[in-house]
Image 1 (cartoon, rainbow, N blue to C red):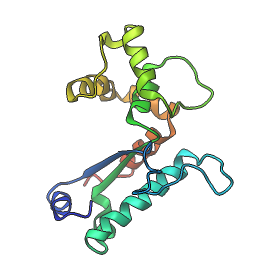
Image 2 (tube, rainbow, N blue to C red):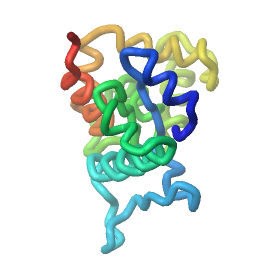
Image 3 (tube, helix red, strand yellow):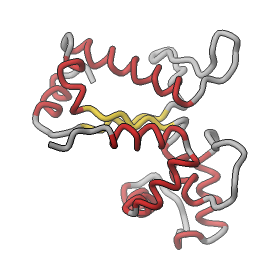
Length: 166
């Protein structure tokens, strides 16, 4: 994010989506805690805000005020704790008391392979597999449904809705 290549990409496109999972954000090289000072889990919104702030610092370390001058071109897609949680929220049809934010890859794999959802024999972290899994988001009703089930997905969708499409 601090590289000249990143800055060139931002300057030469209408928008850049920065997708990051929060599962490793506590790593010493990134340094964002998942708990508050009372050792309570942060809300998805607060964790996303902290991650976004950290990413902006990284962006601006490459060129001072770069983010501030081009914030309208940068879209944050921060999934708590993994992108698979967004997919799981779609493929899981059961009601949950709270959003699933851990173990989503295995839960998604179980749903799709064991229960024969979406005709998947195996879930793999490949372009083809994720392209097929995420194809459901081409329909607005699926986007709206997942936004009601997963707060980090809702934050991403709300950010998209705030864009100026001129």
